[in-house]
Structures are given as C-alpha cells and as structure tokens.
Amino acid sequence: MDIEAPGAAARLSDVRSNIARVCKPARRAPEDVTLIAVSKTKGPEAILPLIAAGQRVFGENRVQEAEAKWPDLRAAHPDIELHLIGQLQSNKAEEAVALFDYIHSLDRPSLLTALARAMDKAGRRVPCFVQVNIGDEAQKGGCPIVELPGFLEKVRAADIPLAGLMCIPPADTEAAPFFALLAKLAADHGLEGLSMGMSGDYETAVMLGATHVRVGTALFGARE
Image (tube, helix red, strand yellow):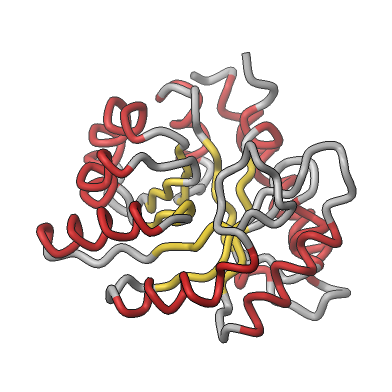
C-alpha cells in the first residue's frame, strides 16, 4: 500500500494538471470538468491510494464487478460518487439504479423502459447520459444519430434526468471531429453534459467541451 500510494497521487496530480492546462486556452474552469477514475478490473488495493490522494469519482463497466467491491469501499468513504460507464443489460437495471449515481450508457428503448421501471420501484431518479453511436459503428452500442431526437423525447417523457450525451469515438482515428459532433448534438438539444474522452484523448475532449472524462490507464497504470 505504501509503495502504491505515492505513484497514485503523482498520476492523479498529472491528470488534474493536464486538465487545468487545457482548460486555460479553452476559457473553461477546471472545476467544470469531472474526472472519472475508471476502476474496472482494479481491486481495493489499487483504488484506495487514489481515494487517499483525494479522488472521489469512480467509474465501472460492469454491474456485477461493482457490486463485489464498492459497497465496502463506500461504507468507509460515503462521499464517493459512482458512475456506470459500460454497456448495461436491461435485466441489470434494478441493480444499476441501486448502486450507481450516474449511468452513461442509456442507448435504446428497451433499456429506457427497464430503467424507468427500476427508478419508479426504487423511488430514486438516477441521471443518465444518452450514449450516441457517434461513428455509426455496427459493433458498438449507442443510439444512432438519426434516432437521437426521438429517443431524447422518450427519455424526457419517462422522467429520467438527462445528464447529457456520451460517446466513444472509433478506435485508431482522430477523436476531435467526433467530440465536436457530440458537442454540437448536445447544444442542438439543449444539453450541457458531455461524457467524452479517455486516457489517450481526454485533453482533446476537454478542449472541445467535455464535462466528464473517463480516465483509467493514466491513473491506474497499464491494465493486466
């Protein structure tokens, strides 16, 4: 633990400094960018040093993995905010609503129905980002751009708080045009939240308006 902690603190400081540096020419306040530490596949021994260094917002890809490790961590650190950033199966909607503070992957009518039902049952409204299939990739989740206006109407009608839009640009391509497109789509629909940018491109995302960046490797080191 003692060996890990200074490394975690230094990595966190580097990422925060990079965000602040990019915010300056973009005329943005660093505090307007939420840094989500993506802790998927990482155990408490890797997460605790980041908590000790001051990080309070974490992201997980899978409901089952989060259920296994976060209840104990949050009992000890009740100010933690937990985001679901991975694909969500409709049959896990109740568990997701119980565990997470934000959901970033609302992308289809069947999931919308399941989440609305789960939120009604729990008496809890969890803000959701609508994931957009920004590169029109068949293998990726996300609402097709052409279907976005109608889907956003359905989300609002279901009384699910709309946090904004989320995207994952196509791999091995320049991310900036896709981030710019997501920002335009959000503006067109009166949404301020933009969940975009990961370890390799979060600075570009911040420059183009990201309000939430999802950073794993740059904070935890390379994944096994």
